[in-house]
Picture 1: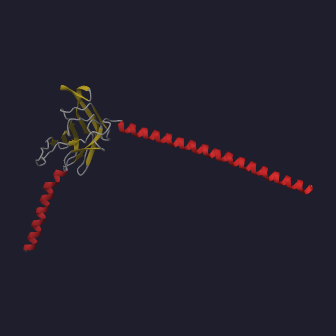
Picture 2 (picture 1 turned 90 degrees about the horizontal axis):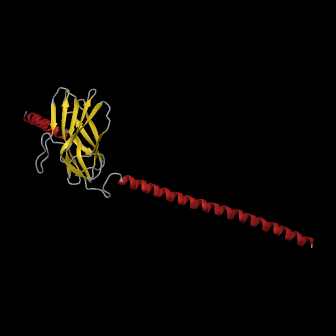
Length: 244
């Protein structure tokens, strides 16, 4: 009896722990595709899981950081969703990368055309953003998730250093150190340069190989002609000796 009670109590405790800890892994988050380097451009994905057992997520609103406005924000088209980009005038224009910004995208909203994100599923919402600021190590995006039953979950609580994760943390994008060259396009240009250089080397090698091949063929023909001449000369000399 004692053993059965202990097993039952352990099962209940384990279930409770799993139930309480599950939401911590199911919050809205943001991750870059590759690297989000300071001063560059990046594609980031907002991952939105459905935490409801009965309702679908039908609307996702992402608010961009006002303290670090981004000059370029472009959403990717997603089947089954309508996207709206909201621009607003900044209270105080800022200068970023030598460009004065007085207006910036402050909010991006996705609204489901159909069922949305059903229970047990998640959806990624990609954005191309930049240029990323160089004077901060992270960007905080506040997100609002709306369900088909009209319930709303606000993922807006900032993570304080040294503190436990809040119940509804705001998606935070960690920025890596600036890459050499600094801005978008440098890597692509470098790859293109390397490709062009490799092509030039390949052409030079091919030309050299063609030249060597042609020379070898000419020398071979000359050798054959010289050989045939030698044979003919030998035959004629033999005939002369015989006649003598």
